Image 1: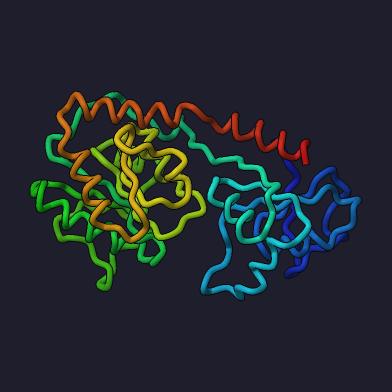
Image 2: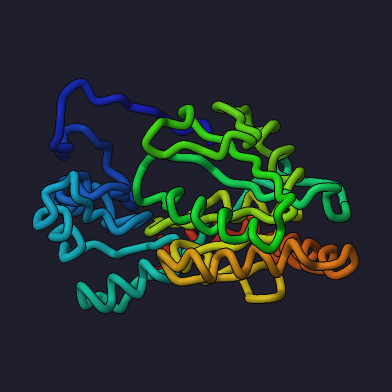
Amino acid sequence: MKAKWIALDHPDPVTDHDLPDADVVIATWWETAFSVSRLSPTKGQKFYFVQHHEVHEALPNHISAGSYHLPLKKITIARWLSDTMAHTYGDTDTIVVPNSVDQSLFHAKERGRQANPTIGLMYSPVAFKGVDTALRAIEHARKSVPDVHLVAFGASPPGKQLGLPPETEFHLAPKQEEIRNIYASCDVFLAASRVEGFGLPILEAMACRTPVVATRTGCAPDVIVNGVNGYLADVEDWELLAEGLIKVLSLDDALWRTLSQSALEQVEQYSWDDATKLFEAALLEG
């Protein structure tokens, strides 16, 4: 884009002095939403790009939640966020522009099932990622599929409080091309988050032809169809997650290939080019 990048030499707030006159100005975080709301009209029409419901324990919730009452046109990345803006804040005039996945980075050749039934997992000690729920589901699934192999990757090594089974194949901070190979080495990818803004690993796995079993958070309800390209479960429902894992891992090769192809086709329906056009259209419409 050859965009001009300006790093401010002072802390918040952002003021008129920091920005050139423009057609639009976009807040991408609750704190900057307050700054954008105070800018003069010469800085452009005001938008709020909502990528998560940023009301977390570590934040001053009453203030961060207040950002969603500001008179800013909202663009969200998932249907659940637009629903939250409508039901919680009374804003029914939002536009959904979902994330996509770079299929030049995340792709895989057509394949059959692995020699050993294999589950993929992104490891994180952060509680909302639900790794504890995932591990409970895997433990339960092993009662029906005892020879299951677990492959995990993460930005930090497994800790004592939330350890992985000793036989787990773990990859620490792998490069993107290595993550692609991890997805492609799995028969199913498990995502058990308690909350997600979007959950891009779900799309990355599907782009690598891997069916996904996930909780109903982020993009999962928008892209996963039960029995077609994966399975959904309610948050914390480790039993239903395990049931989904068992169903995928118990398929014969032909049926698994059908699920795998459906996962890929879901991702192929929507690209970053599509997202770009929708985002631009949202700015023009706003």
